[in-house]
Length: 491
Ligand SMILES: Nc1nc2c(ncn2[C@@H]2O[C@H](COP(=O)(O)OP(=O)(O)OP(=O)(O)O)[C@@H](O)[C@H]2O)c(=O)[nH]1
Ligand SMILES: [Mg+2]
Image 1 (cartoon, protein in one colour):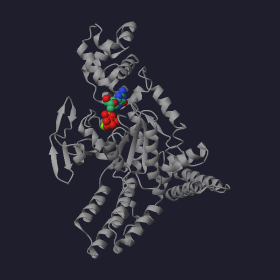
Image 2 (cartoon, helix red, strand yellow; image 1 turned 45 degrees about the horizontal axis):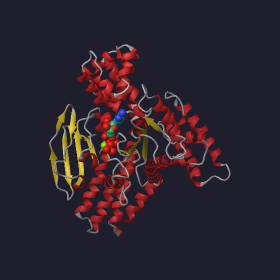
Image 3 (cartoon, helix red, strand yellow; image 1 turned 180 degrees about the horizontal axis):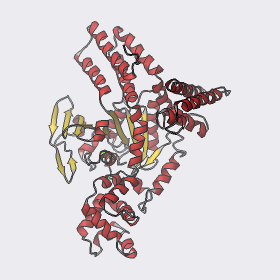
Image 4 (tube, protein in one colour; image 1 turned 180 degrees about the vertical axis):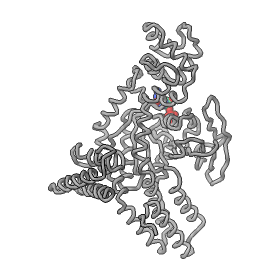
């Protein structure tokens, strides 16, 4: 017999099964509850669900396209951008619409210039229960991406739809993790981020939140030839007074440049290359405004310049030319430089460390919260036992505690050095033993164990400080427990 302990995913699966048989034993398993339990179970086998959220036009759909590497999310202001849309891995392209009331229909898959058309036809956004796009993509095999309509005060129904999805009053959020985009700090962002963090800290909402300073190429007021200003601005956000430490790590990303890098055509490169070779004064004169860029008499055809302007925008063109002049010779080199410069690779890396390595725990957490809310909605004395088992598992599973604490770490009243050390040991930068202890990856088991032992002593010392508040005490205890787990693993 195997002595392997059950994983949280296994335990969640067992509890869902127990709930079903307890309800069945009491003749209380309606078709509706059965379907909800089946959906909860399926969630454990599906890819992690990551929602892209943020205020209106913060660049969510463009970033989704950049992550997938294809233009499948609409960025024009059609009815579709007002609907929460699911993008899932699939053997072939498909678009499925679930109408309010549950009727389903397939929409035609139409592409122009590589861009997918999502057209709801006569159906308005408020009559859509769910819109799902299936697409063959290695990224979508790992993550299901959910594009949410922008939140803004001048479109209340749309905002309400997004808020109901991210922070539902009843039940649990259908996403396991959130990428939050903002162009610059705005009071609407602060309010929504606070709500998301509150939900995460209490375990009611997704436990993983990554912040993105989006449309990063525009940060410099359009004067930029690099994303340096955006990177500086994202670093400043860590200490922004308005955020009051609410969220600290914002990655500066230009979804548009990342997308253009991945879809760059030879023709676009040739036009950019010709512009890069112009005498400095001529080039600078045409880059002053979109009007001059298109209308100035040049050997390079105006039509090609117009197409570039639509695809890249003025700032994108300036950056691409500066990358060519900096040594990106040839379309493949420019494509790679655009992607590297856009910050997309950093975002991929962050998704891997923050969500990828916690994939199963984040899913188990969502499934347990969902199971709990199903059982509380359909109360039955028969399932009281399962509800308390779910509560115990949510409270006692150490990785869940780590994730909740990581979500609330920003508000902890400790010096930055201590906060960073806590973030590291609790697995905020990666969950391997060496990453948690700040050791090189090839450290031997003996050395890792010794470092874990020292770390335990360090956190015990912190714990002996007088007048610690309860969240800080809890975090230090969790750090000790994380180190004990490392020692047990290395032994
Ligand atoms: N310069 C620049 N423009 C961008 C970037 N990302 C998006 N945009 C432009 O901003 C506009 C809105 O982009 P979307 O991706 O549709 O933004 P969104 O957040 O999905 O918008 P809603 O869903 O309507 O809230 C489009 O015109 C995009 O081309 C970027 O990184 N840089
Ligand atoms: Mg959008």
